[in-house]
Length: 239
Image 1 (cartoon, one colour):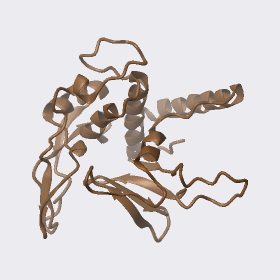
Image 2 (image 1 turned 90 degrees about the horizontal axis):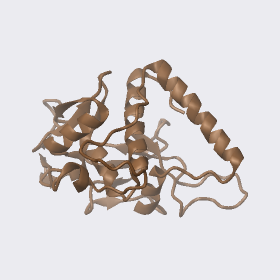
Image 3 (image 1 turned 135 degrees about the vertical axis):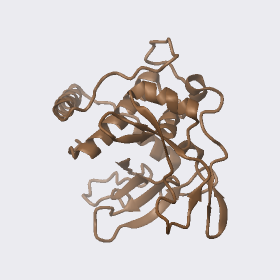
Image 4 (image 1 turned 180 degrees about the vertical axis):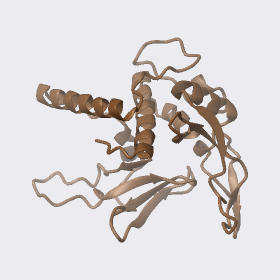
C-alpha cells in the first residue's frame, strides 16, 4: 500500500502557495517495514526515512510517528458544505467500486458481539494473546537481523482476518524470491488472497487495532485496505 504522508509539524500555515518539504513524501510498505520516499513518481525518487520497527526508525525531518498515525483518521467536516462534498465524493467512489466489482460490504469482526461503533478493541481482544510472530527475522550478507513483527501474523490471526474479508490464507516468502537474492526470512508472511487474486498482509490488518481507534473506524480502515488492493490489481484509479 502506498499513501501520501504530510507532516503536521512541517506544514505551511501561511498564505504562501509554496509546498511543504514533506508534501511529496509517500509511505511505501516493504517486506521490512515502511519506507518514506520523496518524489516517488519522478525519475529520481529518494528514500528519506524508514520505520522497520520500534528500534529501527528514521523519520524524515519534521515528521513524527504521531503525524503519521493521524493520517489514518478521517478528517472532520467543518461545515455542511464540506460534509455534502465529502458525501458526494464517497458516493462517486462507491459507484466506481461497484462498476469495477470491488466489494463495499461492511466488515464483520469474528467473535465480537458488540455493535457499539465507538467501542475500542485491542488486537488481543480480536486475535488472542499473541497476534504476531515476535521472533520474525532474517539472514543476509552481514548476519541475522530482526523484522517488524506486524508484517508476520500468526496463523490464528490470519484465519480471523480471512473471515473478516472473505479471503484465503496464503503463506508467502516475500524475501529471497529469486535465487540470487542474498536475503532470507525465517518465517513466512501470512497473506490473505481475495477473490480477485489480490492479497493483503494479515499482520498489517491486525495492526489497525493497536491505535485506540473506534470499532467503526477500524472497520472502515479494513474495508479501505481491501478496496485499495483490489483497485490496484484491477487497474482502477482511486479517488
